[in-house]
Length: 112
Image 1: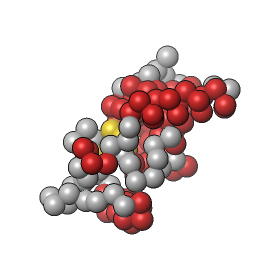
Image 2: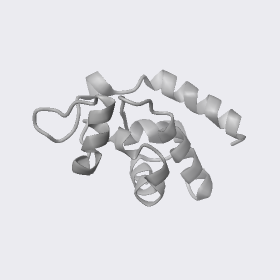
Image 3: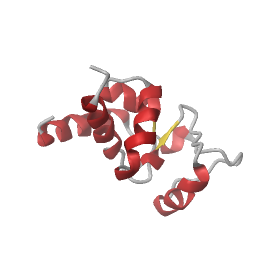
Image 4: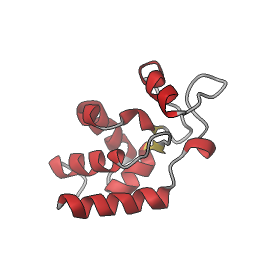
């Protein structure tokens, strides 16, 4: 279930459901899409240009390519922590129940 084009499609669909101004962790997306957090990262690295990759962070809110994401975060109102490494997950994490529901609806609508 975790390998191949189907996993890529599931991860990209899950990432696409994260609303503007919110973030989700690699683990959050992996739990929804049925893959591991590292696989989410690899999929976003290789295939993530068409989805809001800047909304996916580590479990503690750190985003490694923060300089690249900073203008997008500023436009969406995601504030950078005082240490300059990411955002406060408590403040900006997407509602995970709603994210999972949105993913299921999008899966049905897309025929996945």
